[in-house]
Length: 396
Image 1 (cartoon, rainbow, N blue to C red):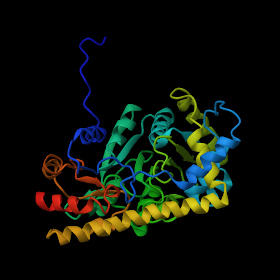
Image 2 (cartoon, rainbow, N blue to C red):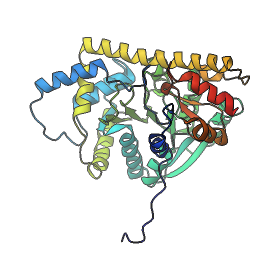
Image 3 (cartoon, helix red, strand yellow):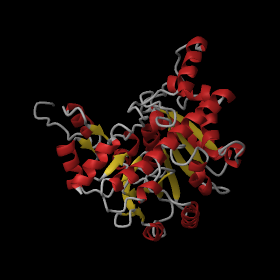
């Protein structure tokens, strides 16, 4: 079975992370993987997370299995975080949430759920999108298509082409949208553009699937939910994959959720029953610890206020770094217009650098970005931004 087995190619992102680890240059900089770092280059543990964990250590009474779809308390705080307090969707009970091991599992559960109830549906991904999206939906056996999203020449959303493409998608197909902080481009629709997107989706009878991995890291927790809320219309249907790796710093705890929005409370419970079948055949039930941290923080008014301040601090640092990056490039004599980077949101940026320039950054300067030109803005800080900008000036 294994004698003639050849090694699979490395993951495009984690493979570069391994190359970075092996690089002996003491001044190397990793701007590849999507992990937030503070001004010291550290991925911090939130103070509120530490406080919540201390409380759990004292109050936890057992290590029993959770139910297949996880904790009802977790589902409630996730829905309140996504939709806001007192939203019609939560008040009517027409949403159901399953706790998952991270946002990737939320996507995979959603993908298998679609395959189970509507196997003929195609999933339309933005071009470009997170490199793992095609793998996740393809592994579930779904047909994958793409719609135009980014104009490399303008360093902005190719909005007219995007809308034109959405208008041609057959009714009942699934359209994957990034709720905020588009990965990999950092280019998000404006509120007016979200309205147009929502109108086309409603008119065409399409089902939006929102990848919501970065809530709070763009402009703020409520501001970043604006796109989802625009899609929330009476009787609307959608799926939402939430991740709390970034906005709680719970990367290794794998904390996520898959929420399905249906026309009625009865339909929501029917949908959840099918999602539970998918979960049972995959990992049976979710882990408890990370979700218990989220419940503890979001259900305690004092901890929640502190956590919201921590998230806003991350958001502010990312946007401040964007401005400093553009300013430092200009100071290095770079004449190309990089002002679009200030308009992008989240930790990722499409820099406009070519594959050859990205490779030169890695090989000659030990500055690691993806071949697509995507870089993690949060990986820059006061100690390395000068070197990063100088290296970019050199390759340009």
